[in-house]
Structures are given as structure tokens and as C-alpha cells.
Image (cartoon, rainbow over all chains, first blue to last red; front, top):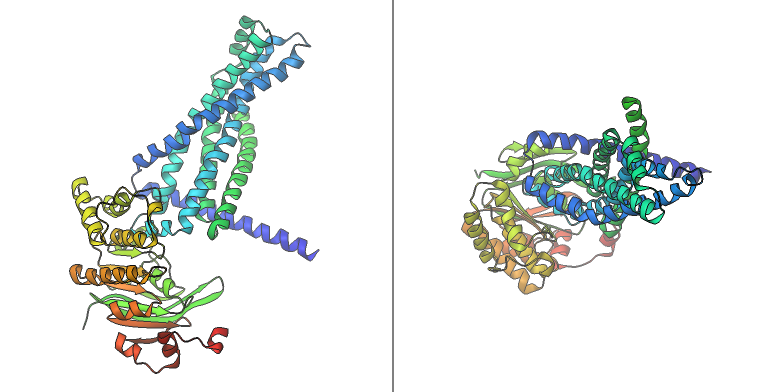
Length: 260
Length: 252
């Protein structure tokens, strides 16, 4: 029993410590933006790595989800004689939920893991201290360019995810499952609008912020050695994924209330 | 009286509940090569980190050219750090950059020189450490000694007023160690840089040091010239200088 409380207490205090470190990083980002010019050369390098190089995986996952979703929806909708309703459902879901979430999860896994591993190994090999010793502010050099790059890349990536998801849904529903294309397209355009795409894009920016800041915080505060880096990476991916899902819940409610 | 480059006054530092420094007092004069020796874990590297403001003391003062670093923010420390260079124990080279980019990094950050001038300064710094023409190599392709020499070139390229060396010869063979020692001496002579060297290599300490401080249990146990430390009859210093283990000391 004592062990149980000890474990709960230890984890609770660890959580509080992470929250404190996360808040300090956010303050540091603001301080850095105030004092130093943005390093656009590093931002462009990071856009290439985080955005452009992530496109294949985002397109692939978006397409798979769109295709599978269309197939599943068609299974039930066709029983009701509403095959052409697959289009708007797929498009609506891809814009508002599936596109941003799937893309966010893939980016948390691909980019988030890479951020925390890179910063973690830089910290353990004293490269972060070397930056400080050379009069470079680590947040300015390591965190801000990554954050701006991910904030800029996420809307683009989510747009691709949505577009390819909807396209894959169309390919499955129309040529494969035989839904009438005119009705499919007409219903999709009727029930899906710019507002739905806007929700997805707003979410994408928030997800980008959450993923980047959590993974940077974990990387910069990682423990010693290879084990410390490994642990930080696991924590970064798990924490950013959970944070992303929890955020998604609240953003959905807020945006629905705001836009209704 | 000599102008003091850096002064540590009554520095106390506790890390993870362990008292590392317990009242360190050091005065390092301009142009001097000052060596800090002591057994592993006695607080040598922690002392060095205080000089650069990488760590702040729990108590005490760190004065760089008379200015107290205590309480300065990271941003306020930037102009001070521009006057200091540091060679880290494992080199701490940026592994995403090649040798040339690593050495050029502090100059590019400073933004004072043109690309042409930076290229020239990098070549000059690498020549100084006998690694001329190696700009394109990546850190992963370098041996331990080469990494330290590149790191030394990077630390010295900006011609700082103060250079800090954390174990510059640890893990290196005697020949490479000797070349590093000669480089430190050369820097002292040619650029009149103040050097602070942390080591547990007695041979290096005596070869390069104008004065040597021996740390023991977080305090300066002995301070003197290489000759004085070599002839010291203090049992703790004597055992360290001559590399004699002692069961009672080992138990501490």
C-alpha cells in the first residue's frame, strides 16, 4: 500500500516538474523572440526536414485512412440506399478530425521523436553547453526555428492529408464500390465547406505548437547517457500524443461552440 | 598588483544533495596559465563551469574582469561569454556540422567578419592545431585527439581573453597529450590568453601551469607553483602528485 502511494506521489511530482519546465520553456521562447531576430536559414532547413520530408508519410496515411473510412461508411450507408452520402461524411471527417489527427500523430512520431532525440543527445554530449559557451542562446538557436518551421509546415501537411484522404475516399467509393460520381461530388460540396477546412487548419497549427514545445522540453531536460535520451524520446512521443488528443477534444468543443 | 581576469570568492555548490564546492577561493591573473587539479569528482569541472556562468553558485561571487556573474540572466551573460572560450572534455563538436563549420561557428555568430575573412580565420585556427585542410571532415570521422584539437581551434578562433580547458588531455596517448600541452603554451605565448586548465594529469599540469590549485573535498587544499606542489610534504598532495592510493582515502 505504501509502495502504491509512493509511486503515485513520485509520478505526480514528476508531472508537476515537467509542467514547470514546460512553462519555463514557453517563457524562454517569448524572451528569445523578443531579444533575437529569427534565424530564417535554420527555419528553412527545418521546414525541409519537418515539412517536405514528412509529406510522403502524411500522404500515405491520409490516403489509407480516407480509403478505409469510405469503404466502412459505404458498407452501412449502401444498406440504407445512401451510397452518395459517403462523400460528405468522408470529406467532413477528413477535414475536421481524421486529417489533422492522423497527420498530428504521424508528425509526433516522426518529427517529435527526432526533435527530442537530437536535442537530448546534444545535451548529453555537452553541445548545448557549447552553444551557451559561444554566447548563443540555446532556445533561440534550437527551439524557435523548429517551432516556426512546424507551425508553418503543419497546415500544409494537414491540407495534403485532407486532400489525399478525400481523393482516396472518392477512388474507393466511385470506381471501386460503384457510387454515382455526380451525386457523390455534389453531396460532398454541399455538405463540406471552407469552415470545415478552416477547423482542420486551426487544429493543425495548435498540434504543431504542442508537438514541438513538448518534444523540445523533453529533449532539453533529458537525463544522462543513452538511457536518458531514450527515455526522453519515449516520454516526448507519448506526452505529445496524449496532449494532442486531449487538446483535440477541447478545441473541437470550443470551435464548434464558436462556429455554430 | 596583477589585474585579475577572474575571481571566485567563497563559492558553494550543492548538486543532487551532494556538496560539491564548499568555499572555493581563487584569483586568476590576466595572462596566467592556471591549472586546477584534484581527484575525480572533487569539483574541478564544476568550478570551471562557474567561471563561464554555465552554473551559478548557491553562495559566493564569480567576478569576471571585476563584474559579478551571479544573478545575471543568460541574455546578460552573452557579452561576457563572447570574451571566453571553452574546450569541453569530449570536444562537444556539433555533429551535424563539419570541422570547418564547427570552427567558423563562433565567428559566424559574432557576425563581425565577412565569409572570406571567416574562411581565412578558420584555416589559420586549424593550421595552429595542425589540422589544416581538414575542414570537410565530419566530427564522427575524427579521433579523440583530433576532436579535442578541433574543439581547441573553435574555442580559440575568436581570440578570447580567457580560455577554459576541461580535461584537455584525458583519454589521449602521451604524444597527443604533449601536442595539446604545447598548443596551450603556444596560445599563451602568441595570443596572451589567460588559460584555466582542469586536469588530473600531473605531468601536463606541471608543464603548462604558472600556478596550480589542488582541490580536495570541495576546497582549495593547496595553491602554488609547479615546483612547490612537487616538493610539497602535505600527505594528501604528496599522494596525489605521486599517484599513491591510500586505503583510508579510498574509503572516503
